[in-house]
Length: 232
Image 1 (cartoon, helix red, strand yellow):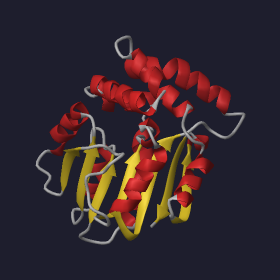
Image 2 (cartoon, one colour; image 1 turned 120 degrees about the horizontal axis):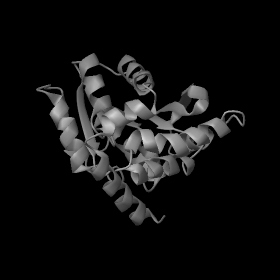
Image 3 (cartoon, helix red, strand yellow; image 1 turned 45 degrees about the vertical axis):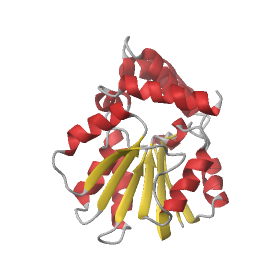
């Protein structure tokens, strides 16, 4: 899929599934998505200086941004996403929180100056972008020296013993649990985007190519979900 057509396709996918997205994520992850996201928010909030700015890229319905804002009320959190429908859901969940805001924008060209944030994160979003290195480079650009970039995403597990079970679940069962009859095709796409995504070591190599240091990762579910981080 060409870059522009992928971007347009992903836009329409998320515009269509925004209303039921949170509940669908719980179903298809068998309730584990909360602990996966906690792995990201715990590490980010533990390693971010007080009173600074955080950027959540491809924030979707705002789960990560809101969790960070609740855990660290001294931080100012900005969530950015290109889907107005997803952002509408995020805004409805904000409920008066003063230290978090949401904005429409493209991860490929972030509308912020260099060195604007102490940290940036992206969760289950990088695989849906048209150019992984461009997005990571933009995140690096807007993060201050010494700050961290975090990516939490779905990967095809490395283990050949786990892969068959993974493929059966995510190809055959996940689209039904997530999308039902109405949005079955959209959730087939989410499976395909994971199949087409980088392996964890390839993502770490991209981190190196954009100049990040102290790169490390934490793996969950036999490598089906991995958090990768690096320092500018």
